[in-house]
Image 1 (tube, rainbow, N blue to C red):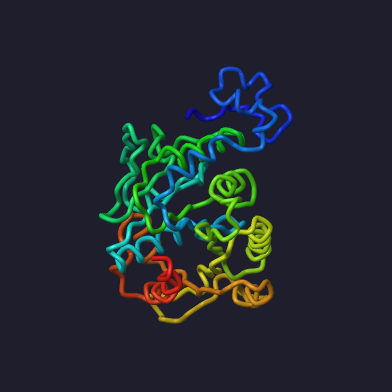
Image 2: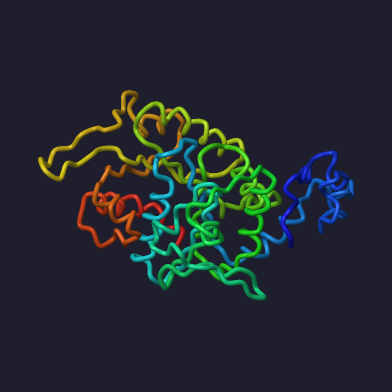
Length: 311
């Protein structure tokens, strides 16, 4: 299926299928039908494409700069090494700031297209990645798109990528609770099956109140959208100095940090990860962090115990 025109009015609007932007769109007839207007034709394609993906995790925050992409990479790297019999995928839907290709060391790779759709880039034997970063002529190219075009790109990623059989698909999202989030939730959520729990959320935050303010909004977004929250991970909780060996709070938890927020909002607290300069260096180089012997890997091991039931 072709993506929507850039100025697509949206399938749920009164102008769906009737606007000038709809001329020539392959979905025009479906959208203009008043009996089918509320059902996006792409949803059935997404369901078919992801029928062999057992669990889908949205990595969310609401706040930028808290480490969603890093957490996505860390969880995938660690779980894939510990559970080699399982298959993992990452979908980078941070359209304007795709960073997974660099974090996973596959920057510069290209995506191939076949009769079954786009083939995601293989990172390891049991890990694959799809990102708009693979489709850019240069890593420095800016994506300057309005909401409808982002929505069309996300739908293509979900419906036209040949993921094969996956146990976990982690979706690295941008900050906020708007276009990209609403698009991906509308395509992935099974509205006809209230018992469906294949779509879940993991919330990432840092300890300071300015981050927690936005993270509370993200938690309420998940509750309103009826997305189960697996738990909250507190990133950059402390800094371990490699010279003096002391721990410092770079982001002071004046209100109790993520743990207190989780108690207040009745969501699970999964654990915390320190601010680790060695980890930052390996991320820039796209290297595997699971070989590190550090507090970060020990903390990651404890957090990953919460995901064993999904494998």
